[in-house]
Length: 242
Image 1 (cartoon, helix red, strand yellow):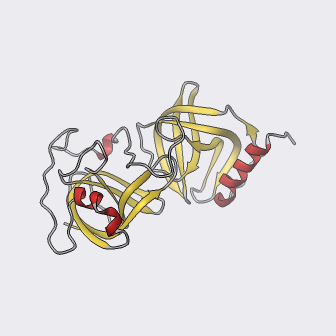
Image 2: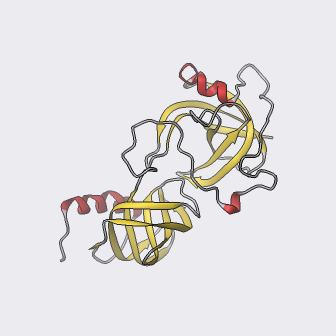
Image 3: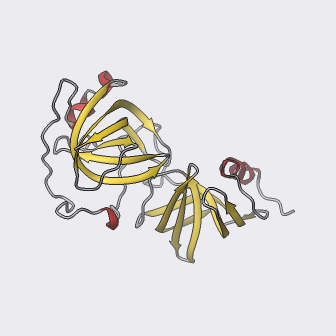
């Protein structure tokens, strides 16, 4: 059997074991894979990406992450599996690359940082009348637990673990990420400088870009999902209402 470094073996076991896989022996791949994402499938706690690289299109798998079509990505510490079968997708890949998704900026990220937003909004998620830079003004939700996005960002430590309501416009909607739907809201308050103008909401409810919704959920702070997706504040287990 062809051998490969212990670090690569450790990575393979970490990534592949939960996938319930059946494949031929692995072969080392180039250490870095770069390109633009042309297809995304989320399944079994992992994100499968078809990447258009300088050498052509290739499939890759990483830990579940909010990656979207059109995004440029870099995978480090990669290795290639031949005839890999994903039981959750019910599909066999003749060749697939497993690796770690490099964090935005290409450098090691701190454990907690301001919200990292996807660089490119998928065309399929764009909303008519919600062009980039368009002004958003949404009235604050009603009730004693209501907060604007800027207020929630400012008071996040005091509000941690409490249920609050935030009303805003959906600017991004990513379904099926880590078993939840990811909704990004803006209400016109806050600043892009410190990421206090946008709020991540995780929910089992569905919505669409451009919709005005009230999200009522539990405040979480300093949440790190890995792959550079770290948030100072977000709402979890949220319910969405018009």
